[in-house]
Length: 307
Length: 70
Image 1 (cartoon, rainbow over the protein chains, first blue to last red):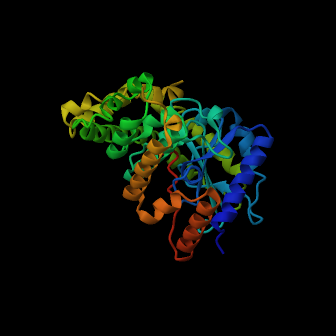
Image 2 (image 1 turned 120 degrees about the horizontal axis):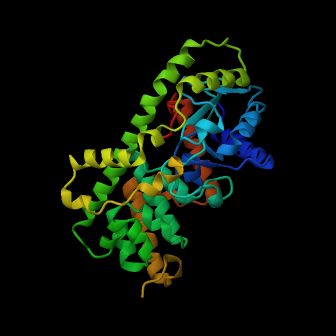
Image 3 (image 1 turned 45 degrees about the vertical axis):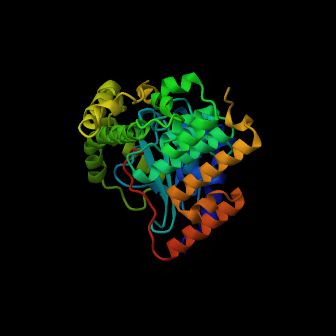
């Protein structure tokens, strides 16, 4: 019998409570956080941000956390070891509590993709703050973008002006632009905001270009990780563990494979500026040159990763 | 001089709330727009029922384990 949504939610929240009781900074993000912030998604999986330095402590906690009497295991051959070295470089560790078809899925990462500021001070209850969640939702998947705008609108409504950075709907941007203030600093970070509330015909193509730009950035970023992970995946595949191996044995094997085959920080190795240039070059193939002039400087979204 | 949204007169705030609701309808459909504006406990209950029903019908919601988060 699969676990119900409510049971899984309770399980993940209790995991966060226990982690924090041990001094492990962590927060639920993505779909489950969106539900809490007023945008209903339908995922049962849990994405968890954990401070990279606490990776070892979280692994120890997972190793003793049962669900229905079962302990978790790593999921898939691509999952990086939950270890501070790879955690800092943007890798994700995937876990599952069996049975696979009806158990619990947990993805853990230390650096919020595209996060422009540390997520730890922005935690709200069990969840990463809406600003962090909205930045994380700027993916190459079209379905994520309405979530970004909805989170931004909620932030503006509650007086957090950073919400302006997340509105990608033309009508809503015009409505907010007509009525409310936005700080000059935000217009510097996101030039397209200059066009909001002026019924400017350049707004729509500029917004389209901005979304496509984030798509391209994600495409290039994921490509970097995909290329970097191949030798590691083969090594994990080859090193067959006995089926009843526990999390600790699985982890030791992954660390051994990673030490030989998994680069610590492929984006830093590739170069953030190069990644951005490739995304812009790809975008220039499909977007009007005039719309390119309104693109934001995205480097701040990758500085935490490049450190 | 324009003010932050949480300091606006009630009439303007109502207008903005309407614009936000209209966005939710455009982006997520009427039913989910309504759900998104429910109190948190009711929203979670609704989503829980929806997800549990989908699971019972054999819908898979797990994402591939890629080693990196999109």
